[in-house]
Length: 227
Figure (cartoon, rainbow, N blue to C red):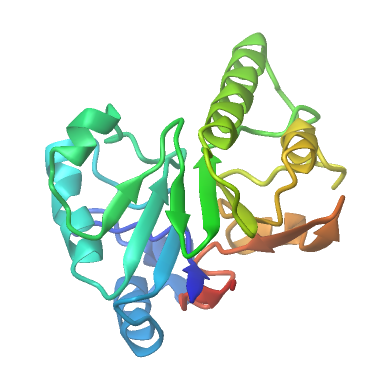
């Protein structure tokens, strides 16, 4: 079984309590861990599309990553906008976490399903979209293309993990969606949207792809079954 849950926003140091973002976030880590243990088995896969830890450095993030590593199931992680600790794949793999696979220009095969992904970027029609944003947007498109191209075998399903929603602010699909369509992607999971941002959630079948928002507060801090 494959689950998804993003935006864990873990903080081993307990210096960034998420309760400031609303009552729903009070004790959110406990909610996530308890729900995870109730739903996920060791043979399952959990997709975590970004914003895993508030840590700024990899050695600090290790404590939060280790807590995720000790939960049931295999985990696939892509980068979020707050994952400042994210470094080269070689450095992250050197942590020797037993059940975590970091996606960066590559892919993971689970029971004939290919998992790919990248961070994505903010919407082009958003206020203040700058030349720097254009550069980052195109870089992330390239990373998703690299990830898709890394699949070297035929699979029954393809799942894309993004942190940012692949939609413009007017809710229309953006270039990430058309790249996924070109590659015959089946499912796309994304996060990033919290509280008032939930009004920008787009889900359902669009361009032949099933879109699912898995921001932790959007799914009540409980891993959502995908397949």
